[in-house]
Image (cartoon, rainbow, N blue to C red; front, side, top):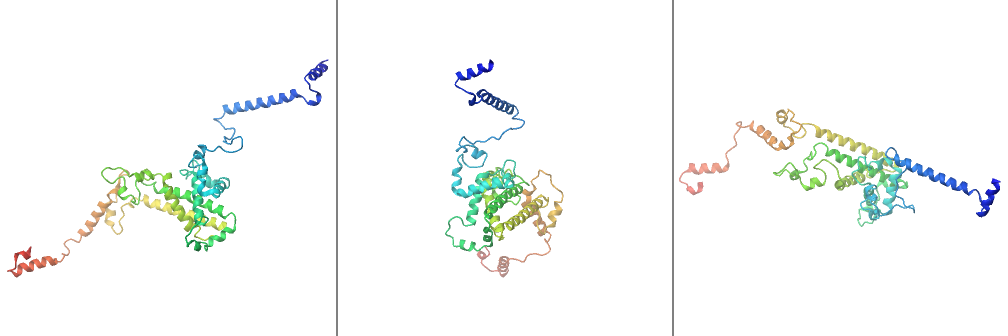
Length: 357
């Protein structure tokens, strides 16, 4: 009886056995919806402990939102619309950027938060490096006749390999990150003052006011940090190393290019550490070649907070005075011609007094 009543009820609704079990379908959909809701609730309750999914900004059409502030905050472009930055490098710079992100995680990680070169925005830095390589490899138009000589460089044989350009981009970005680390190491010893005295009149310790110049504060030298305002100096050093030391070595293959880059990287690191050790020596700030008296007088180490390098000119003058003073009394300088003339005039007698004046 119950089976007949169920069939009569389905007949009234216009459904037959061939239509399938609609109640079962609706029940499964409800079960799936409940499971999803429960998963969302549990994920929301334990979000702080462990994230359960990747946060993306892809819209329904599978495209990222443009413009959006995350292009600046997360990817390192200058404006919310990255198209503006790609106008200089074009599609080539986009291809290089994608290659670094997908195939060079070690280099890419250096520009991420926590990396040693994270002070530079990754997106615009990669585009600038691509522009630099386009200039070196003559991708852009130029009227300089010297470019004809560059085509005879041995490194052009390397570009028989289609991956050569990708390898040059990777090595150049790695070299730029090394320059950032070395520049930070140079400013690590004495924050606020260049160890080699390049500030001169702009040194913040000089002058009555004692204030630092706006140039030093702008470029981060006053506080011993490297900022995005140092990008001009960073790219200048990178250009010199890539053109002269990397491509200038004439690698004929991609493995040879990577070998040259590894040797240069080790040499730069070794030279940087040696320079750092020289600056850390206590006598290096006032060591005058050939003047052992100066070292003997100041053999006692000053206090850690004293600025002994500021007294270098005065101490040097003292050493010079002692050196030349030791010869005092040993010999007299000959009389000047003027004195001889005056004595001759007086000895002759009868001369005009106006001549003696």
